[in-house]
Image 1 (cartoon, each protein chain N blue to C red):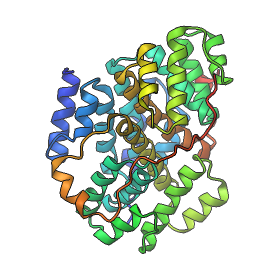
Image 2: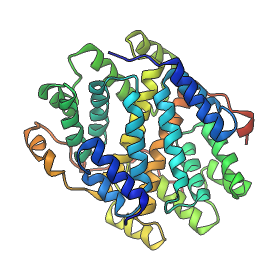
Image 3: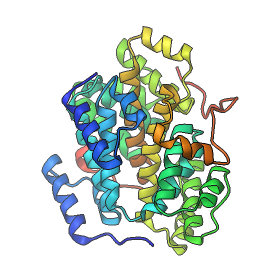
Length: 173
Length: 191
């Protein structure tokens, strides 16, 4: 038997999004109105990315942008294009990733390649893939973090496919 | 690797699952963030719209879709703990639809999610809603798909040993997915 979304929980999640981001993004509004727990999951997991793993914030944005482009998500490519520029990436890098190309920066280039390879092979990287990536500075830690980012972003990309979420003015790229 | 984050992940897992699954330790050996993401997602969805048995039916379907042995065995156990019969679990792992109408609708929604890569057209969405799978349930399925894709991809690489507490579950299952002999590339690598 399905459980019903509670209005108070919807409000709580929307308030915490406003506190964290300064406004209520349309994605969180859409999610929280239909399923507050799913909205809470999105906020909680994205907040954890700030904990500081092996990938820096600009590197995380590059991976998120790559996944969003891979899934053809109109909303997330704009959001992460904007976010990427706010953490120091240039417009050319963002546009290159969004058009299916590879960034000129060596580190960002290999992260985009690793993310696309992971998606194309549905996670089944073989020893040769792992050795090649390791030689280029992408180790297990980075790969596992890329997988977490793929999971979070695939979830939001699919929501946006169904909801056709309107891009917030704050996130227009 | 040990840090306050990995310690927190281990503590949360101990509380939630009664032990630390090998999958979490495999990630924690390298980085703490993914384990923390997994635990936080799991905790958030405890307040989800789907009942525990429904969530497990969806997770089992996705684990089998990804051919993840570790995830399939773990969710087979959790599904049975949540009330699914061994026969229902074996049906899901064999790629068959559940006999229960509600679970059948959820499993079909899950399959459409990954078959269409999330591009469910309004007709499909309406059809699912008519069968009791509304927008909220659909978004929860998307969340479960994201998280299980994440863990399956990690397990493809890490290949963790099945936890000792789950070995009897694995032995009792009719079918357990294995790595496919040929890999189907979904797209050509760009660049």
